[in-house]
Length: 289
Ligand code: ATP
Image (cartoon, rainbow, N blue to C red; front, side, top):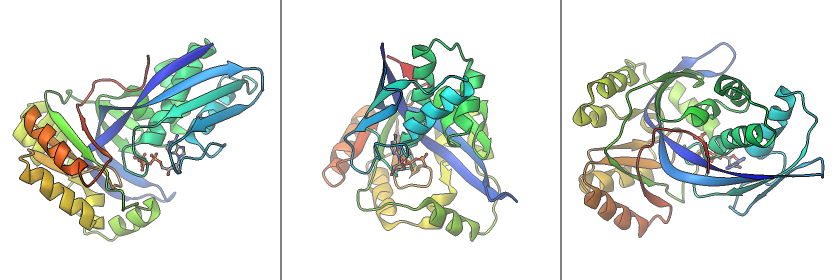
């Protein structure tokens, strides 16, 4: 048996790091949005008794370090099943180390795919419970759409959907951000009001100007990556309504009302940055094809 899933990328329309908890984790308040930029995950069963991975994207480990392998072991453990032979093939489109949750979404797809393959009838809440143990963004990638995520990122509240716009996502290839370093720099920032509250209000108002003026990211503020600043300027010069960095970077997204302006911006940026994509917000998370 085989199952194929689409694992979407996410962007952070807004991201506030509220502070460090006693256990070392950071408390976040962020609005996440899935987009139609997908990795494709193919899962097949076999009688090897092992979880194996294939992926040709540079820098993605094809062993037990892969988030998909971790997700598979967590799934079998949760369902009290012995580890079965499964092969997971990852066809990556989502850039890595971009703040686009590529790995998390692949992991979310594996939980959904194994639930289908092994007919385990897990509820979304149970799949989220497994996802939480793999990474803070995994629960969101199971649900998708437009959501306010708080706590370490795994507590979710559905928001009015963000749609009717065109997005350009651009990943500079020369920059990779260490998450630990990113948090250190954020910790050194001066305290400010929670801008994500403004984004939530803006989404309820359904006013595009309010939404695009509320795009904010504490990591962008703390890191001040020159390449990100340059890309954002190009996007705004191309008449984007708003732009910002996603997650801990280094991908940058821009919101356009006009499809032709978005296309032009995408073509322009692609000349310098091959990992530039034209996409749209979507209302769902991982799905079976
Ligand atoms: P996030 O937005 O959740 O912080 P990210 O975009 O910063 O995610 P990922 O694409 O999830 O980063 O990848 C980070 C690292 O995780 C990669 O460099 C890679 O070494 C490792 N990794 C493990 N499994 C995967 C996977 N299935 N896809 C991508 N990267 C993976």
